[in-house]
Length: 208
Image 1: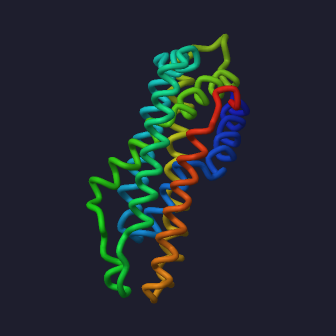
Image 2 (image 1 turned 135 degrees about the vertical axis):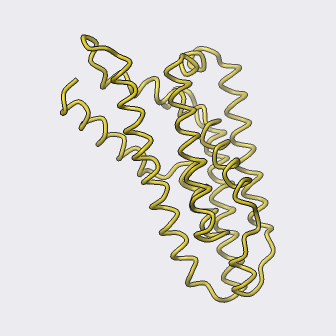
């Protein structure tokens, strides 16, 4: 594999990661709802979720999802329902003054698990990796080292991307002072998550 192959993969991955999807919306919503303290837990959950999805794809789960309509549909609905649940919870979250708005409403462990579940259980990611990775593999070279390099590259880029969104959203949250504004932020974040869940539920296998 040449440097040009790796650079092409890195550039394509960076573009795909920058496009807001359910994971990015989750990161933004947690940053808006819980501040910078949630960033580490959220980003760690996203990174581990991407690692799980990529590894599962390389081991063949992605190919199985591509052929098993029942399994694909089940994972799709589980992930979509979970996003909608989180959105409703954030929409109904109580608000108060700045101190109350800044206090974490969830423990980092729960935030980590939520981010991991949403990222790892996204069937679109599993199928995407199966369709995406082979385009950059060199058949004449050993495949295992290439897959490890591509997975490591993607995970680094995904972590940077999630951290950037989290920090930007938490910085915007720092300007909030009034409970009425915090309520709007919670409802916007909740609406984003609900919308992401509805989009995930309506996403068709053929779209990939």
